[in-house]
Image (cartoon, rainbow, N blue to C red; front, side, top):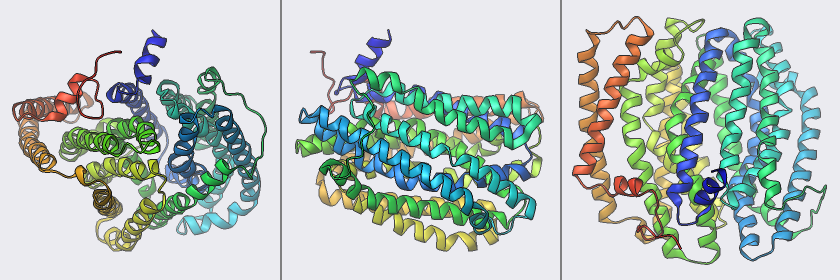
Amino acid sequence: MWQKLQKWVHRENSLVGAAGILVLTMTLSNVLGLLRDHYLARNIETYHLDIYYAAFRIPDLIFNILIFGAISAAFIPVFTSYIAQGERRIAWRITNSLISISAVILLVLAIVFYFLMPFITPLLVPKFDTYRLQETTKLARILMLTPIFFSVSYFLGGVLNSFKRFVAYSFAPIVYNLAIIVGAIFVAPHWGINGVVLFVVAGSALHMLIQVPTVISLGYRYRPIFDFKHQGVRKIARLMIPRAIGMGANNILLFVYTAISSALAAGSIAVFNLANNIQTMPTVVFATSFSTAVFPILAHRASIHDHESFSSYLTRSMRVIVYLLAPSTVIFILLRAQIIRLILGSGKFGWSDTKMAALTLGWFSFSLIAQGLIPLFAKAFYARHDTKTPTIISVISIVISVVIAYPLARSMGVAGLALSFSIGSYINAILLYILLRKIFRNIWSWQIVISTLKIFAASVIMAVVVRETGHMLYNYVNMQRFWGVFVQAGIAAVIGLAVYLLLTYILGSQELIWALRRSVNGNGATKSKK
């Protein structure tokens, strides 16, 4: 059965097949992520959760700049081009060189930042008291081990993506979240965040190890190679520089948000991160799954200069993402309070924290569609070996978000930071789309406009149904209890989704038909097996 699943996902024409397995595993991963946050909020006070989330900033910055940008923007397109040309031996040599070089660099940085961390932490959270500064420094030092494991893991994942082997790749975040959940349930009540951080490190190691068997089955063998002069390695280095700048700018935005949050009410850093984790679930499950599945296809089409098929895959992925995220936006905005209460509203997560998190989630959810389209549009540029354009656009949107963050936070609290993030996301997505349209004229048509209007109309009616259903059920369930909130939100969401699906079916939305067919090729038809 496992081999049949891999074969189904591996078929190039089965974009929704690949996306399907990613949707399933990413849904599971996100459910586990919600459980992780539930137990963290339940067993650790937000005062200490502020320390926990602040400690991630420096390790995440280093990983995102040096590794994540290289994988998403540079490694996969270059690796795919060598595989397409039948030069697998060279592709393995490049992979080994990058893994070896990255691991050594990150190990050296872990040692350097061990000594620098006491000087950096006060800049990150200037309003923390002495105790929280010391704890943040200690945890950040431990977490500096995670970029080393993640660097190897993400290069292995890049190899699996290039071969369209998504199963092992998509299970990596699942084992990572499971490790943290174990720490949050069994260790946090006794050792607090110190014990949880150790399980974070263990989870990052498992994130790497679970992908090793599948990569080996493809013929890969690790060799400690440091080939700085290889043209493939140099090309990846050139391509990753703009992306690294963009990732650096994005992390500066998170630094600004963290610094501002440290001056707001206690628990603001935790609330911001918890609300952000919740709102990413629809984009990760629906948008990231499609953009991840389509990326190696786009990279291959770009390498053989098949521009018509390239733009066709891009357009259909874009329309499906909008179709899936529109109802998610409605649910997350209208049922934001219920979602927060169900996931976080227990234990040491107080009522004031719940209200603050609900408002923050609402403003985050305002930009779900934009957030879902950004990685797809960016990967369209990456597939064409263009990392500069999305980087410039990202920096522009981030600068705008930074400029408006402080005044919005002063008037709205931590929710203002979520609003500034959403505004920046829309600016990013719109500018990327405008530039893509200049390259591919056929990604804009009246069919797309009509499709968008159908989705918008169905979403508006769905919103009315969700709101009225929720109000009607309010008097029939006990909203002071978990199950009362669950029944009210669950029924309202299910009825709303049913109305949305029915309306889009009546209106003849092609996106629904594509999803039901389960297999989409470049011209929108369903191919038979060869």
